[in-house]
Image (cartoon, rainbow, N blue to C red; front, side, top):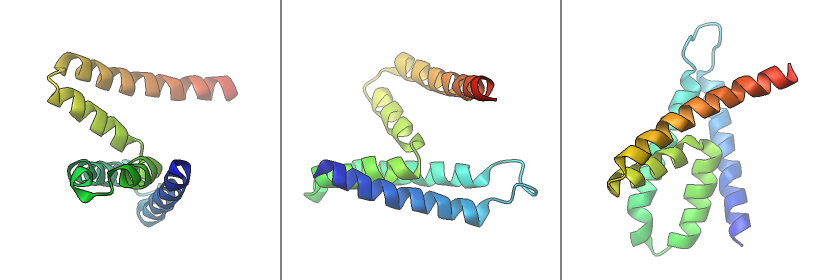
Length: 120
């Protein structure tokens, strides 16, 4: 049943992300991709709220799969990055958290470039 929760939540999250991109994306007018920034920030805010609320909700397992993994994951995987980094910082793992942030940003950017080069 977990796969169904993730599937439904992810689909709804992806639709919401697409809606924001239709609303805010005007490539000829924007240098900054505001639609992506807004999706990432909203997903991170929602993920933070869920991390606080779900343990008290009585729906932790289902809610985590449907809302956190599914919806936030479909809306923006940046929210997962934010939650994982926060947990590392809360555990006092500042060095690994900073390393994770730097590696994530650098390696993802390099992976995009590599993918473009390989298939261009």
